[in-house]
Image 1 (cartoon, rainbow over the protein chains, first blue to last red):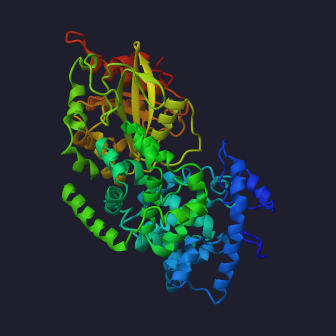
Image 2: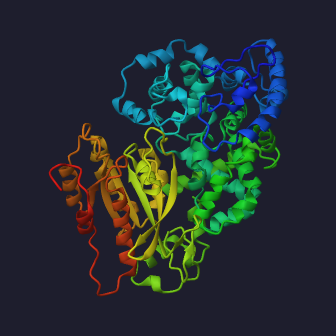
Image 3: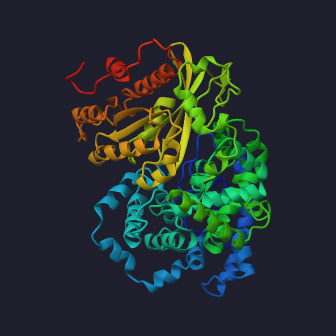
Length: 355
Length: 254
């Protein structure tokens, strides 16, 4: 996936022996260390990659030029366009750090992360995290107990540090997968910690704390957006009494990890770090709207659930570049004002129901 | 939540509460019903055999939920039952909620179980307990190598009593029974707790497949019996059936 056409050797997330694009395309492992499934379609992937590598090359050159002026990511239309077109892997960690404010926090708080690690640990928190260590990306060679270095240890550190840093959240399942991706991309546990802090503390609403109110709210907000933008699907969901949480909770909690293909998730996260949580709704709405005909064919409750799994598979989501263009056109306009307003009303409803 | 908004304007046939009450009645399966699809409540009373999405015919369907602390082996138990495989080190922690179907042949009848797998972590309960009320059976798991998961059973039972249907079929399972070295909860302790709460109990192992099939079959039998029972037919005794069929892990029982 890394682009080498600009002459720089891009960092490999795992010891790589292969060099040619073709070798990498045909590998049993993807560029991030994930094992490809038995039924992985190498032929169509190769076809896709031959086009995508050209895009990556072009983007990489543009990004290198943009970053020549120094390490800062301004909020302007040009950079926004660049981010939407994809951040090349060699710049990804840096762009995420700069765009999210994680870099600023890291520089403002030297030694803070290590202090957290050295502090006395909450046993209960540590136990909860341990339960999930071997259940986080067992299909990634870097997370195997036998691999050296083993990212399970890195993951443990990031999660324990974060649990002590943000006691209201502590550890919530889903954070293991998110931190895992951050570690894979940054290859640096302190940076991963600050990116996790940016996501949970600033970019996302309160998805992961005890009450999970932000999560419940956003699931309902999505429901309302579907009601407006894809009314037929909303109608079907309503007729069959399918709660949104059932079909989309993983989308929100895991930020599409293990829901969509790795490369597609990373492209979504490029925008998530730069533009904020609105992007999650764009992705969800695109998946639903694009596949509405299939969803509407569902005749039963379990059938609907199955179709919501199907919409996250196939060529449409694997072609990440086209998919990322679609998310900005297919759902139509989506203003932050609308989302803020919906969040307010949905949250108030949930609070009223729960009390 | 979306469900609350939608129930009002709906006909009573597909409202989960009403349909669930139907399932508690007797001899309903003989009656024809308007639809043969699985409702969200899980029960079907088809006038003709139904075709589930896995293209398998079935006569009657129920919703079963797996609950218990994080890491006790709910997903592994389900995968062992559904696919006959053990996910040694290749599974990921369950986030949110998911389900799988399996059709069982119970005394000549095709019984479809829609089995719901839930995230075990405490904070997810406020998201998942909304599903309890539609469940016909709950398999409550603890891990015999994890004392905390056993100590939490009482809290789970409280939660279940609060949110599940009153007559929900409930069974307590001590999982990972194959792990003799790491075991910290004795089988007798599980039996005692189950007795105290009047819940059928057995030990299982998703790894060795011990009693996995039996746990689901027993629940399916009980559910089928409840919904098909003739008025004068004797009650199906779940614990007796389980005791008769159960394979023991220890050396002291044969």
